[in-house]
Length: 350
Image (tube, rainbow, N blue to C red; front, side, top):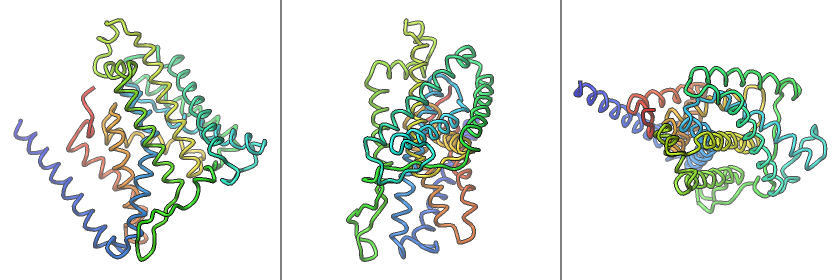
């Protein structure tokens, strides 16, 4: 039995390394715009993948935080993103133009205004998530299937209400501050000239790094974070020691939901939000935490990076006319990771 398990594990690692080697060789030498002949496209795609991974991390870290402590697979996480996105658009337009139906441009948005909207959306999403946890999920603790069904029902109701109150859920977007929404000279010489890249995407990456470091400090260096980490390992023992585990649950759910709100503001400033965006971001979060491991902040970071790299590079380097097959590589990544690490890269048995 042990020999068979070891064989499957070694086989999985062999397939993983072979897939990585082939992908690297293909991108560097064999693709239509291989890195050796078009370094600008390669470097731009690499930065696109990393910055997209940063956005994935902001949203998925909230999802994995809630699951890690409470074992709640919050299927309404995407709905929190959707509500926060439309709220942020409305607030930004009211602050700048006074009319929620008038779009704003980046030149009208200051950094302070943008962060005010970010804070409002994060708090609103956090309070909405907390209300959901206190009113509906708290009374079903330990009943994972029932909680999953409850959050699915909430997501359906929220999606319908968003359609009703946003003019049919039409695509809308908000704007980054004008000071960051421009191209930045990286002073990296490529193809005989300095390479320029989107300042907005670099801004996303910077925010993701700040949020990730803040979460790490909170979880590793504060008493609340230590209680949360202890609760992940043994909730019963933490409660027996006199810790108010329900209060810890409330804090974790609020922070996890607020992260969905932050991700909504960042993502909606980069791309539009519309009816169905909630499903997309729920799926993105699920993929990230499955790859990285449920309940692991480091796993969310690695999963986000891998998801961003695979999705972006497959879309950019597949032969012309075949880019629609890029999504297949995401599921190939999932299959390989689960074959090698059934609980995810940093995951552990619940």
